[in-house]
Length: 361
Image (cartoon, rainbow, N blue to C red):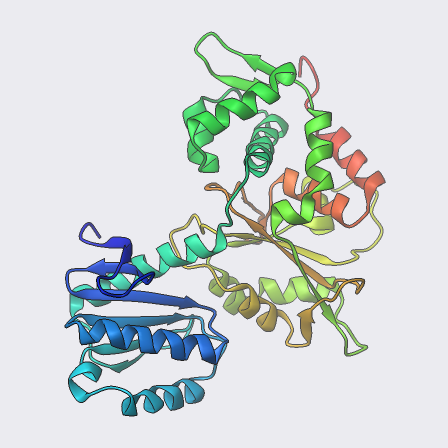
C-alpha cells in the first residue's frame, strides 16, 4: 500500500514512534501480547495520539490474553479519556482462525485494507534480530551449501541477495572468506566447489544463537512420542494454520532426503519456521503452534530434555521441499544442523558424506 509510512515519530510525543501512518491514521502493533502493563501503556500512548486529532489504531496480533480480559481492559480506559478522544481510538484483535474483533471507532475500508501490511511489517521487524557480520555470513553459507548439495549450479550476487536478504557488500565479504572453496565463472557467477569445513565448524559452534532455537518439554510424565506430534502436525486443520511456514527437520527430515541413514528412533521433533512465510501469508505464532501440537508442552529450562525444538529461519527463501503426502521438509542443511544440535554427530557425518556431490557426477 503506497500511502503507508512505516516507523514514524509522532509530533509532540518525544521518543514515541508508531509502526505505521497513513494520512491521519496511526497504527501500532503488539505481537503475541501477554503483558497487561504493556497493553495499558500502549492504550494510553494511543489515546495521546488520538488527542491530536488522529485516528489511533492499536492492533493486537495473536494476543496470549483472552478476549474477555481484553474487553475488561478496554472498558477500563473509558474513564481515562474524554468521549471525543475515545471516538478516535480503535482496538483491533487478530487471531488466526477466528473472526477479528474491533472495539471502539470503526475502521474505514482503506484502514482495514492496510492492517495486513502493517502487521506483516511489524512482525518481520520483531522476529528479525540485528544480525552481526558473522551471523550474516552464516546465513549466506547455508544458502550456498543448499545449492551445492542440490547441484543447482552457479549463482550471481543478486541471486544471493534475493535469497538471503543481505546487501551486496555483505555478500562480497562472505564470498571473500569462502574464496578457497569457490569456483568463479567468467560471467561473475560463483558456486562452492568443496565443503568449507572451517566455516562450517564455526557455524556449528554457534547453532542455537544463529538459528534462534527454542526447546519445549512435557513435564506431565507421559510425553507424546515425536511420531505422534508429527502426525498431529500433518492434520489438515493444523497444516492449514501453518500457512506453508513450518517444515519438519531433524531425524524425520534426514530420512526424507536419505532413507538409508543409520538412525534408530527419533529423539525429538525438530521444526523450522519460516519467519518471512514465502507464500505471502501470516505465519502461525510459535506459542500457538506449540499449544496446538500439545498443550502439555512448555518452554524447557536449562538441562531439560526437549520433545520439540523450533528453529527460526530469517532469510528470504526457505528452500522447503514438499513430500508426496504434502508434508513440508526443511532443506538438507537445516536437517544436518539439527543432527549436530541433537548430538547425533556420527549420523550427521554420514548424512553429509552421502549427500556431498561427487566430482565428475
